[in-house]
Amino acid sequence: MGSGQMVAVFGAYGHTGRFVVAELRERGFVPVLSGRDAGRLGALAHETGLEARAASADDAASLDRALAGTAAVINCAGPFAATAAPVIEAALRAGIPYLDVAAEIEANLDTFAHFAERARDAKAVVVPAMAFFGGLGDLLATAAMGDWASADEAHIAYGLNSWHPTEGTRTSGAVSRRRRDGRRIRYSGGRLEYREDAPPTLEWAFPRPMGPRAVIGEFTMADVVTIPSHLAIPAVSTYMTVEAARDIAAPDTPAPAPADEHGRSAQTFLVDVVVRAGGAERRAVARGRDIYAVTAPLVVEALDRVLTGRTRAVGVVCAGEVFDAPDFLRALSRHIEVDLPR
Image (cartoon, rainbow, N blue to C red; front, side):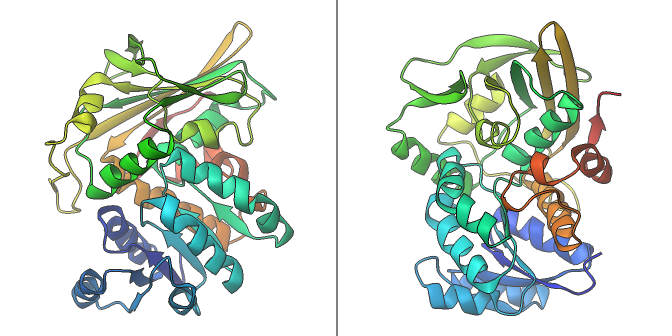
């Protein structure tokens, strides 16, 4: 448990940030609320009784004040193209671990490009994409690999029954599209490829209870950064159920609405990860509810392991590299159901 350690949450008043704050409190940490919107920050402080420290990504001194005396920082404020680097810089100055929930491919690539050497030299822990997209797929792929040193390909199929995006998701998506000039991305031959053609539509045989579903192939997510960062797999493909892809593309799809006492939406998910090497295949599966809500236990479990020394590397590291993937996934049994290779 957190034993009362203070943890800064940048973007605490956002949709995912609120879930993270609640999870931190449940795990015995003391969240320090931070973000640039003083009004929303003050409202959350009044609601929770927690300390609020206003800060902006373009004001280094304010970030230093926000992180003062904390044991770590979790960045929940997108677009991460604008916030990740300044908050990482502040974490390095403070000498504390940094974790974020970025699903932006470009922002995650920037984190590796700009901070890998510095974080390693400082023996700091910087964990990008510690979220549903990026972190969970990486953990599942790492667990599926088991004792394999390499594989030919990895496939991550997202079976979402719907996808009602948050304002942050829409903003981050728009930033990513601008950065890649509207092109789509795939990871093949050990490198990222930028393409202008339409992605394929095909059928994926999801395990129970979903079964076969139409999916958008090469619906590329942060897994193409996290998995290749430490696993020798030259081809990583991600897929999204057609109905969820339509939801996220439609401008009038509403934001997620709470459907239970914990604030989770009615959205369900099944993540099916298949790795292949030669003629062999291994599979790992996760089932659960609400991709935004489940990000909170993912990043808080990661935080707890970092602060208690249950890590395997330093520097800029993704979930599967820095943590014991099967053990981590089993620790989330209250939140997700997992099937791992025996």
